[in-house]
Each structure stands twice: as structure tokens, then as C-alpha cells.
Picture 1 (spheres, protein in one colour):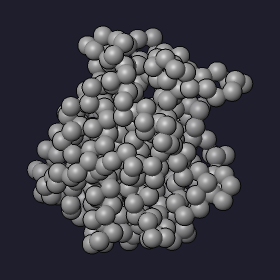
Picture 2: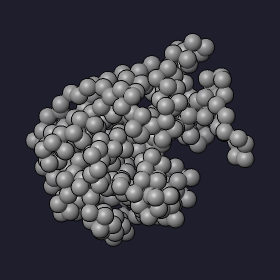
Picture 3: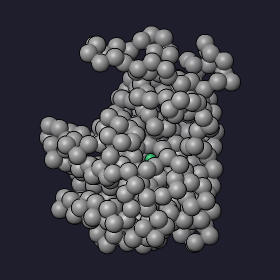
Length: 340
Ligand SMILES: [Zn+2]
């Protein structure tokens, strides 16, 4: 299996993120990639290919130009007026029932362009995000050219990044960028997001698109992050109505409850008859993961990988969440192995 990445991610290490009641060291760290790569290498899946950066112009295919311009200069703006030893983190968010406004002050822009306080502006956030997006695109191009499965082993995560805002440690939506790349020329693409948290950004980007089906299995947002997106009644809008499927599950769901959800997701995808499948591969559904609230065990990832491979669809995988370091690589590789 061809595996694609970009080393610029190492330069992006956020210091803190806000969880209820406290600022804590971020769990979305560079060594997550190392843990996965170690296991990928040990199990003989393939070696990592270094890719080129995506550009701002490329990303206009999925993101708002104002948001991209903000991200590109965010560190320079932040560090011009704040202590550069600190990362930029928003602390005020837009009010409901007010007209949308973009404040002139950078602290206000942080609140406008991010929906939470777990996505820090660091000195290298822009090149790191461009590297991840570039690798996801290359993985998509390789799949399109060869028909063989690929894996974009990238961070920062992408699936929480919406059309015009970031959040959840996501800045640019790598999964959506891969899907958009594959859809060039009229191909139909399905996205299956198996991260424990709703792929709210991916849903947002393709909300009105009937040619890219978005399916996400995740913890019920009434009970878990991102709280405001991921409900079963969100089915798409405009021409995209009926082309978004959310399958929320109660916290603590194990394979017994997860398996029928996965079958329903794959049935919807098979019915859509896509040319390509993009899997947003988060493994924070693992029972011991510090971030997710689902209860999958190691063998369940093998079963998931087998079910995905059984669709027979040309497919690729994009790394998303997963924060339990001792098992992170094993869970990822178990999903990938049936597609090698
Ligand atoms: Zn997650």
C-alpha cells in the first residue's frame, strides 16, 4: 500500500487546548504519526512517501477564500501583538441572533474563524496544514491513477474543518480535499467517517453536493463533541438533500451496537454506487482512548477493515483522530490490512 505524508507536521506542536475547566497539553501531537508509522513498517504495509505542499489556490476547491487568507497570515498577525511564546487561542465566539461580522482585531477573528478553543495558531500551523492537505491530494491522485488503495498518514487532523472555519485541531479538511480531488472529472465519491466524533467539517463542505455522499458514524453529539453537529436529522440541503447520513451512537457502544451501524453505513454507500470511497480513519473509538466515548476493541478494527474491503470499491484512507498511543498504530493497521 502506498502511504503518503509530509514532514512539515512536525513543526506544528500546539502547547495547550481548553477542555472543560482547564487548559491542558494538547493530545494531537506529532508522535501520533510516529506510533502509526512504526506499526505500519513493522507489519510490512509499506513505506512513507514525502509529498509536496498544497497551495492556497488549490484549497479554494473546498475552503472559503477569507478563511484561507486568515490562516495563511494567522501566526504573523498573532505574534505581532502577543507574546510569541504563546499560541493563539480564541476566547470569544459569535453571538446568536447577530449579523455575522469579522472583527478587525485578531483575537476577534480567532473567535470568528474557529468554533472552539482546541485549535491553536502556532508558528507552523499553515505549512503543516498545507503538507497534510498535499499528502491527502497525492494519495487521491495515486488511487485515481492506479486503482490501488492508498493511505494519507497526516496531521493535523482535517475532518472538523468546515468550509469557512476550523476547530477540533483541524484547519484544512484533508479528507474533503482528497474527495474533491477524486471527484474531478465527474466521478462519484463516498466518504465514510469512522472517527469517534462527527465529521462536521466534511458534512459542512459537501452539504449541498449530491455527487459526494458523506456518511459518519460517531458518538451522539447530544452527549459528546462537537455537540452542535452530527444529528440523524441532518441529511443534506438543496441539491444535496439525502446525500448526508449521520449514525449517532450512545456513549459506551461496543461492537454489538457498532456493527449494525457500520453495515447500514456501507449499505448506503453501496446503494450510492460511488467510483471511489474515502475513509476518514479515526481510531479514537477505541475503548481506552482518552478522547472518544465509544468502546471498540482491537479485533473490531480488523472486522471494520474487512467490511470496508468487502465493498470492493477503489478506496483510500485519511488519518484522523486517535490518541491512545500504546494501541494507536495497531488499530489503524488492522483497518488497513484487508485493503493491502
Ligand atoms: Zn475524533
